[in-house]
Every structure is written in C-alpha cells, then in structure tokens.
Length: 539
Image (cartoon, rainbow, N blue to C red; front, side, top):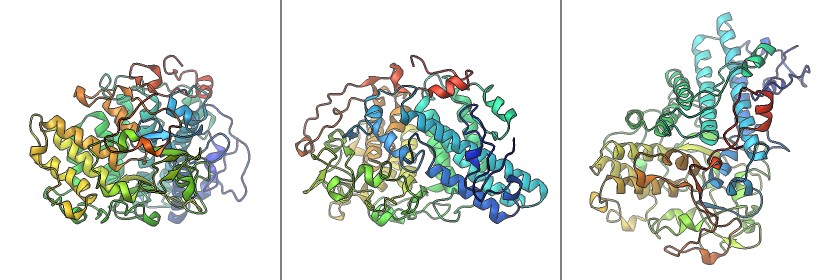
C-alpha cells in the first residue's frame, strides 16, 4: 500500500486506531507525501496544528458534533451526571444510561479519541524521523512531541473515565483500555492493534504519567499561541488531575505547589498568579466566558471559531443556549444543584452566567428552565471549550491539602477554597462571608464543601462525570455517590422547580455503582474487528 498524508488529513488515510479497518490507497486533494511533511520546523509545526484540529473536530456518525474535545466532552460529561437536565431526545441515551455497543455517543467518543491518539502517534513518528535526519533540531522535535504526548495522555485518560472502572476500585486492578503509543500506518502495525489486549487500569495510568513527565520536561512555560497549545503549566495541571483520580494526594500537592504560591491572600483572588507561566484569575467569575475570551485564567483551551466549530448539532452555545437567546435549549441546569443551600443566593455566578431572572431560559420544548449563558456565540457558534481553568488547579490543591490533614481542618485548604469562592461573592459581604475554620466540624466537612464548590464553579463545563467516577470508591464513605446519582426525569421543565431550598423530586432512579451501566460499552465494531478486546460485562 502507498501511504501518503496531508498535513491536516493524513490521519484519514490510516487506521483510526480503533481496529483493523482498511487503509485507503488514495491521495487527498493537495496531499503531501509523508516524507515531505517534516522537511522543516514550520511544516512540522503545521502537522502538530493538524493534530490539535483533530482534537477539536474528530469523527462522529452522521457528521461533526464536536468529538472529542470541540464540545462533546462537555456535553457527555454533564449529561452523565445529575446537575443538568436533558430537555429533548438529543442526549437522552447518555442521560438515562440506555447506551449499548452501537449507540452513537459512546461509539463516537471511543472512535474519535483513538483517532486523535493515532494522529498524535503518526506525527510523533514523523518528528523523530526528522530529528534523526537533522531536518529539525532535537529541541524542536522534543517540544512538539511533548505537545502530542500531552494530547495522547489526555485522550487515554478520558477513555479510562468513560469505559473503565475507577483506579480506586482494586487499586488499579480493573480492566483498562489499550494504551496505543505506536503509529498505525502499516499492515504490521494494524496487526499489532489486534494483538494488544486491554491492560489494567494502573498500567494505563502509569503510561499517562510517563507521557506527561516527558511533556513537562520539554515544553515551555507558555507556548504560542498561548493557552491553546499545551505548555508546562497545562502539563502540570493535567498531572494533578490524573493523580487526583489515582488518590495520590501527595503527588497532587507536589505538582500544585509548582504552580500556586504557599502564601496567598484569598481576599484578592486575582493577585494569585501561577509560579510558572503567569496565569491569573480574571476579576469576575465570568471573565473567561465574556465575548469568548481566552484569558490568563485558561490553562488549556480547545479553540473553536466562526469558521471551525462543532456546528448547530454540537456547539456549546447552540446546545446549551436558551432558545429565546438564540440557542436550541437542549440542556438546562438542574434544581439539584441550583437549589442547594450551600450555594449562596448572592453568589455572582448565579446572576452572571445563568438565566436566573426573567425572561429565564426557554428550552427546546417551549418551557422555562434556568440555563447557562457561559457560551453565548449563538450565531457563529465559536465558543471555546475551556478544558482546564486556573480555579480547577486551585481547588485540586485545596482538596489535596484537606485530604493530607486527616482529623485537622487545614487552613491552607480553606484559603485556597476561598480564592475561588470569594471572587464570586459581592465585595460588600467580604471578608465576613468567607469560610473560616469554625465553619467546618471536621476535615470531612471541609472536603464536602470543596467538592460542592467544584460542582458550582464548573457547572456546565463537563466536569461532573469525572468527579462521580473518581469519588464512587473514595476511602471516605460519606464522600461517595451511590453510582450515577438520581436525576430529574428527562425533559423536566418549569421555573417553579427552582429556588434555594425548594424540594427536588428525582424521578429517574440512581444507577448503582455495581450496575454494568456505570461504564460505557466498548463499540461493537471494535470488539468484532479486534476480538482480543474484551467487552465490558453484560454488554
């Protein structure tokens, strides 16, 4: 077979990384022979840009839906949890847990993530060849490879979160996914995929960390373009996230201390900058979302724009936006989180990022719900996907400090928690309204408050499923969700549902952790073509 690859489209000619599919013996329009891609640093950089583009817009049955990271990771992560309401039929299978080995969302997620992984691996192979030939320097090659290994680690981690039991179930002994660190461009490599079984979860995590260690060692503090190309700060933040899922809180803290000063003033959140790369929180909680800004608060962002976005059937503004604002009104805020008494009524996030006052948000069914306005480009649908923001780094470090002080209410954990929460409170109520040690009966109460703050801060950003997944086997029993928590019934609507302290009726039952539906099935095509890949039980 001939293997020719264009800068942006070469991955369409190779295995998508999901089995033994045929490699097309065709050359796309304006294709460039593989050996010609890496003849200069500029072309090598363009090839890496193509992989980023694949992260933003991968494959999905029937067309572009923002898989895996253009928007789909946010929408799927939210709808697996209980803090949103799916209004119509768009995310109903995800929301209700009725997926099977052929349903589009889980199949599309698996396929697009492995496509991204293979794109990264093909490009890494090309970079290494260019370094060996002296076409590009080892420094350039290592930096670009570091970016690709960041994307590869990120994709493998999401595969583990959706298709595998958590690390803390058996300390990593559960069945993982194939970690693919080789380029599938030949029949021999294709055969290798058919002989690579699912490893254990702990082996997948070890290789994720290995990739991120390489990235940290080889990436600049801030890359260019800033915040949309992986850099050292993004890598450290991603390592914190991965270690958090492993329950390695000492490593979370060690990496967090690389970024966050030990001495902070929680009353001036915007004065806190990371020790590497100068990331700073915006003055207001909606600062990273106003006019689709990419600010210093963005640690790593998947860029969308008017010309390259997930389209009306996938973009964040169209899916989440109220119909009366120009969106489709498909995903609403759930009163489960909105009515939580731990979320203050005067919290600025309620008023600045949600339709919490008339005319409220009109949904796809014509009814009223509270909906987000975080994503507001209803016409061009160019809202970026904020994959990691600085508040996540701060709250991960807060949780690590609290967990590493058993039996003690950690003052540093409180200070870090206040950094995020104080920004969202009116200045007129500070400092009196900020948390102090006396607010917490013990360290567990502090942890519960940090976890609630995560739900509030990252509501409608796709983070809820990851927290459910990691906490379901938490050593502290009172922190564990039952599994997939009970939810409001699909399509629930009416502004009367909302109000702080208003009782919530969860008519859709929880899915216990022991239920096979807690994790997604491996796609049927994958299991058919690669019979060495074992299907998840009961699918």
